[in-house]
Amino acid sequence: MLVADFNADTGVITVRESKAGKPRHVVLTDEGQRLFASLTAGKAGSDRIFTRHDGGLWGKSHQLRPMLAACGQAKIKPAVSFHVLRHTHGSTLAMRGVPMGVIAEQLGHADTRMTEKHYAHLAPSYVAATIRAHFPTLGITGDAKITSMKPRRRRNRREAL
Image 1 (cartoon, rainbow, N blue to C red):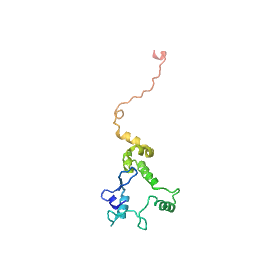
Image 2 (image 1 turned 120 degrees about the horizontal axis):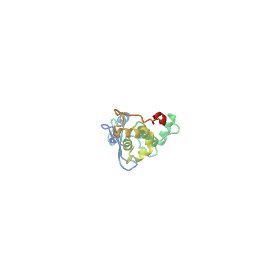
Image 3 (image 1 turned 30 degrees about the vertical axis):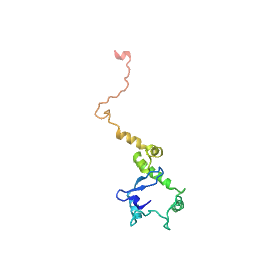
Image 4 (image 1 turned 45 degrees about the horizontal axis):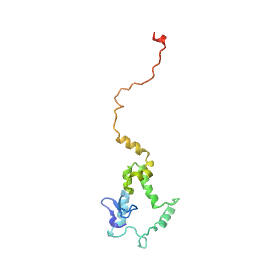
């Protein structure tokens, strides 16, 4: 990832090589924006944001050992991967009531089907809240006079006379 991939004005990073083969944009939280601002400060747009301690570039599997070490230091067992962190991000958004379409966009899903498959169960109020927010009022409560429909007691013939 290059320094130019971070847009400090919009708080967005561009992932140029995504799994789908298309670039995508990831919205950063305020904390994420501060992190990327510190990582890119004073660097040229063509500089890499993430490099190894020796200044070299990270390879596809170079993150494994540092991630295992970080998990060990934090006492996280079993250790997690970046893919697990991605799922944690999506799960957290779902549990906070973020609409599935927004989560799909953030995770780079083409539509909400995959997002709903993996995250909708974490937002049990999502369906209820959506229905309640969009269904019209039918006018069946409120000022209407409602009469109880208790069954009438049948009178026998003698009482009727």
